[in-house]
Image (cartoon, rainbow, N blue to C red):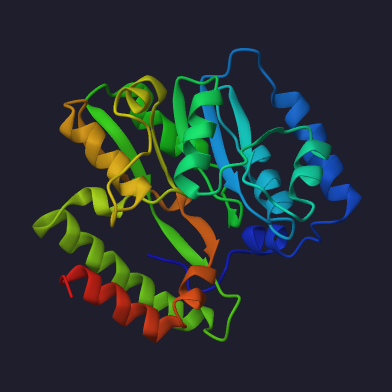
Length: 268
């Protein structure tokens, strides 16, 4: 069952002051203890003007409990705020990509990642402690899986409350079932909660995609169509990630955004 309220651990992280030196120092200290010259997993985060969000995201990832060595790679896509400064102060690798665009930023992260496995994350998302383990294990343990994608819930930043989103997320789950059953499961893969093998991702021309499509779903589709295996939906509630609803707010709010998504689904 999905949570009605934001879990205390997630809320505690989200409510932290991103400019608090203690937060940055904690990320730095935790990441130093995690660093490995040969990471198996690379968590790639594109970032554009994310100073208010990215320290909390980095801390949530550094708090993860996993047996797999991992690195975090942030791609600064021409931020004009303190995003890069905060990332570097945290001891995290930060790569500047001057060409604007999410696809370009993700490709830059992919090219610079050291790990054999790529986990895609976003700078405005809080990740639970089991996320890395739950997302990476299917890829590492099963060669018949080409890509993984997971579940998520919303942290409201607009007028829509969590109680409303609780029901909305079940409706979204139903839409994802429709995609998987009648359309294409690749449409369910999102760039802030998915993963694949680096070598295979590079072999299908990275995140490049045709006009009118999205880079994340298209990557999943290309990997499957190339014959690398099936897509795997990580449903364990311990891997549920929490992302802000700002994309919905950009679409005009929950109801307008829902109408837009339904229209896209039925081809209008």
